[in-house]
Every structure is written in C-alpha cells, then in structure tokens.
Image 1 (cartoon, helix red, strand yellow):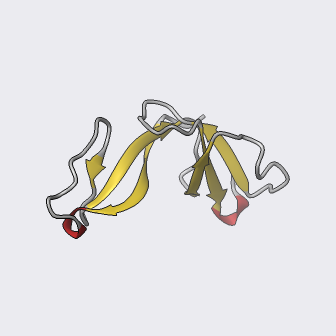
Image 2 (cartoon, one colour):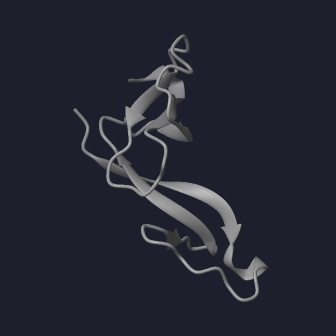
Length: 91
C-alpha cells in the first residue's frame, strides 16, 4: 500500500502576466516558476505514475489498463478524482 501523496494541479495562470498580480485563493500556491497551482492528495499512487488530469467521473479510462483513478483528498479542487498514467505499466 502506498502513502497519501501530494500532487499539484497546474492552473496555467502565471503571476507575472497580470497587473496587478492575481491573489491566491484559499488552498492555492505559487510554484517555483510563478504559476498558480492547487495542491491535492491521493492514496495508493505508485511512484512510477504520472498525473494526467482531474475529473468528477471515475470511469473515463476504465478500459485502459495503464491508467489508474484515485479519489482526491485535502484540496480545494472541485473535481473528485485524479487520473494517473502508469509508466511501464507497473502497479
């Protein structure tokens, strides 16, 4: 079993592109390259998995064995699930 792991949803909003700068809402952070990100946590995500996207539906890639879906915890994201691509199809 894997521990609860922290991931970041990249909003694509860059701080320096706005004057005055956009404030951070609750639960948001600035990344090291000044992009607004929203942290979230998921359980049982292998180290080899790569974050793909978030969604409210857990069945979008149900026929793809190299994709796993995990519930999102401790986040201000409105989506309920995160999708991850397994590298080398290792679970």
